[in-house]
Length: 444
Picture 1 (cartoon, one colour):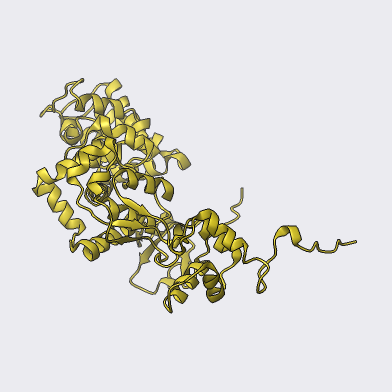
Picture 2 (spheres, helix red, strand yellow; picture 1 turned 180 degrees about the vertical axis):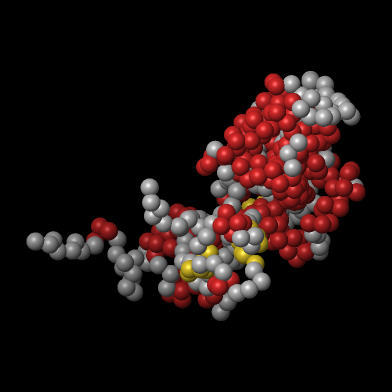
C-alpha cells in the first residue's frame, strides 16, 4: 500500500561539502532544534554522501558516573584505557573478574546479564579478552540460526578436535573462531577468499544480509557463492560444504555482529565486570543513577548488591538527594558477602554504604524531589508537618515517602509515618479523606 508516515532512525548525522538544505529535503523533528533528512540510508548512499550513525549506550553513562564516584570516594582515578591495559598486561589481576563471569554472576553487567548470556558463560568460560568478544557475538540470532553455537562450543571444549589446515584458505579466515564463522567480517572474507567474490561484491552481500528479511535479496548470491567455492583455484570445495557455508552466511541475516562492534562491547563488558567484582557499592550506585537501562529493576539490583556485601540505607528525607549516593561509616563489605559469593571476599575493595536517592521512591514526582531538596538547603526538616508546610508537597507524595521509610530521621517507622501523614488531611486546606468527601451533584 501507499506509505502513510515516515519512520525515523535512532540517531546520526550527515556530512556534506555544500549546504545540506541545498542537497537533500529536510524537515523539523518533534524535538526542539532537531531536523530530519527525509531520504533513507539507501538514497544517501546512492549519492555517496557520508552518513555516521550515533548509538547511545546507557552503560557509558553508568561507567562515567562510576569512575567519578571512585575518584571522589576512593581517590582512584581509573579510565577505560587503564582497564584495557590491565587486562592485556596484567593477566593475574584479571583472574577474579573472569572467575566471576564464569559463575554467571553478572546481574547489571553490560551485555552478558541476560538469561541467555548467563547460561552461556559457564559453558564458554571466558579467560581472556577475546573470549568476551566471542561471548558477545555468539549469543545473537545470527550464529544461533546459522547453527554455529554448538559446533563452536564442542571444538572449544575439545569434544570435536579441530586444527587449521594451512592449505585451506577458509581455515586461515576462521582460525580465531575454531573454523566457525561468528562475525560479519568473516562472512565477507569467506565470500572473497572461498568463493572468489570481489570486495565490492562482498560488500553487496553484507548489505543483502542486513536487509534479507525485508528484501530477500541474499538468495541472488547463492548460486554465485556455491559455484565459486566449487571452482576455487586453491581448494575445490564440494557441493554440500558450499551449501552449508552459505546457510551459515544466511544466518547472519538474522543479526550477526561485526567483530569490531563485538570488541568494543567486550571492553565495556570487562569494565562493568571489574567494577562489580572490586567496587560493588560504586557499581550499584552508578547503575541506579543511570536507570532506566539493562534487564533488571532497581529492586533486583539492590538485592544483588546486598548479596555482595553492600550496606543499603533507605531514602532519608534529610539526607537523600535525587540520586543515590555513597556514605562513609558503612560496615565492612567483605564480612557481609553472602555465602554463595564468599569466593569474592578478598577481591572486594569497598567500604562505603549506599544511600538510596529519592528517585527510588516509587511514584514520587521529580518536581516534588527537586522542591524537597531545594527547601532543605535552608535547614533540616524537623517533622512531617514541617516538611509539608515548607514545601507544599502533596499529601499523596508524603504517603509515598512514608511507605518508603524515608521519615526514619524523625524516629518514625513506616506505619507511624503513614498515620502522621494521614493526620495532616483536613488541615490548612489539605484534601479530605474519601469517607468525608462531598459527592459532586449528579448531572441530569
